[in-house]
Structure formats: C-alpha cells, structure tokens
Image (cartoon, rainbow, N blue to C red; front, top):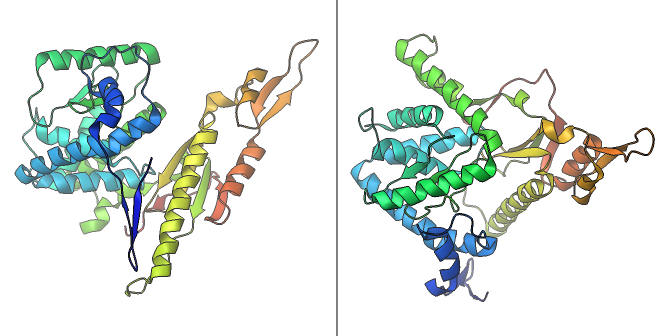
Length: 363
C-alpha cells in the first residue's frame, strides 16, 4: 500500500490513489445478492477498505438525500448517537443511522416523525419491539429493492442464524451490504441489555408526556442519559482532554491531542482483542471511561485447551489422574488492564455495590 504525504507548515495531507478493481473480489463476496451464504469470509483488511472507500460514502449520500426531504432525521440521529454514547456504546454511529432512518423510511404503523425528539422516541420503540431473532432488518434507502433481492437477503439471514444458533443479535442489511458483513453492530451479548435500556427510555418519555415527573425543562430528560455503573465489573477512568480556555490550540497541543486519541483507540482495540473471550469492552467517549463486563460462562472451570489463548488462567488440580481444570485469573486480568491503561487512565477500579449512577458530562 503506497501513498504520498504532502507537508504544509501546520498540516500533512496524505494522498492515496484507489481503483475499484483493487477490491473486486471482496466486493463480489460482500455485495453480490446471489453469493453463496456458506462461502469463505472476506479478508478483514480488504473488508475494512471496502467499508471506508466504497460503502460509507454511498450510505452517507443516501442519508444526505433523505435528510434533505426529512430534516428531522439529522437531529434524531444525533440524539440516538448521544444516547448510545451515554451508555458506553460509542463508535456505533452507522448502526444508529440505520435504526433512525428506519423510522423515517418505514414509519408504519405511525406517521413520519416531524421532530428529532419524536424520531428518537420511535427509534427506541423500534429497537425494543422489532423481532430481531426471526426477522432481518432491511434498510431500503431508495425504495428500489426488488422481491428477488429481498429473498436473497432473507436466505442469507436464515443461513447466518442457523450457524450462530439461538440468540438475539442485530442483523441489518441494505442494498450496499446485503449480507450484513460491513455494518458494525453491538455484539449479541449486548443486544438484550440495549433493548432493556430502550424500554427504560420509553418509560421516561411516558412519564414526561403524562406529566408524572416533578422535574421540568431539561432536567426532566436527564434520566435518558444517566448510566448505572453497577452493571459493569471494572471501570477505567481516562484522563480528560485539556481545557483550552477559549483560545485556539497550538500546533504541539493539537499533535498531543491527536496522539492521545490514537493511544486510547489502540488501548480499546487491544482490550477487545485480548480479553474478548472473558469480557465485553464498553467505551464512553463523552464520559471518558472504559468499562468491562465479565462473561459469567467464561469463569466456569474448563480444560487445558483454553491455555492456548492470551487470557491468564489458574489451574485447579483434580483427584486421581484427571487433568487439571482452568479458570481465568481475575487478579492477573485486572493487573493487565491497569498495565495497558498506564499513562492514559486516572484510575482503574472494581465496581462495588455502593457505586451510584454516573451522569454524562454536560447533563
């Protein structure tokens, strides 16, 4: 992969020449409606390039055309993204855009929302009530999907469900992603919790509509963006960015801020890469926190083959000649998290029973 860097006094521009034929094999697997569901998955690097160079611009163009017709869509998307970020699910912007677009493109049984607040409420209702286990969600941005294309999407969905087995996960496809391989959605283990939070948000809307809350104005909506930290097991409080006091940041300050953002993104990626077998990793960009939620099933005694991974384990001897069993070593895990967060975090704490609700900044 080659590129050209053009240096300017305060900026560096990177020029890369891309031709569509470079990703023709990946595109044939990912965007072909008639592709065999059981075919080998595409190369991750090629899929990431297809996502950034081909898929994302087309989705953005389709959403922009829809916003020109329904201006409330833009505000509703921003509200939903802010709600996700307040619940430690930052980074799923395209997921939020697809969900909110659904309530504008397919508003039945309601009318098309006319305000961002109504669009956000409808998105929460859609998230909570849609049959994610048995039905694929097809985002038809331009209304031109035919019956054969929809049939191909359903067949791909049914094959995916047959491989994964029972369980509720988000399966969202479109003309640009008919096999739901490109869109990054929250993991299946988070889907039930996220739908529960959407149900709680609808309860807040209900109380505000009927006047059952004594809080008026913006204070009455704070419950939508309040996070209960007791649902997590480990919380890493990241260092907040420096306050500029209203002045334009200097070049060295901008470079430090960019380097810090890259370091935090690398830290989160390493946590998800190494600890995904034993925990879920949540990131709150606005709250400057990273939270871990242990997977209960991962802490059952297991055989020695789990030692092949990167997770440290404690060996439990068995009676007789039986091989020892292994369980993840929680002390080593927390020490590893603290080591990875060194220089980026203010504190790494185990969540206790006395922890209270955390509020997003600015709320």
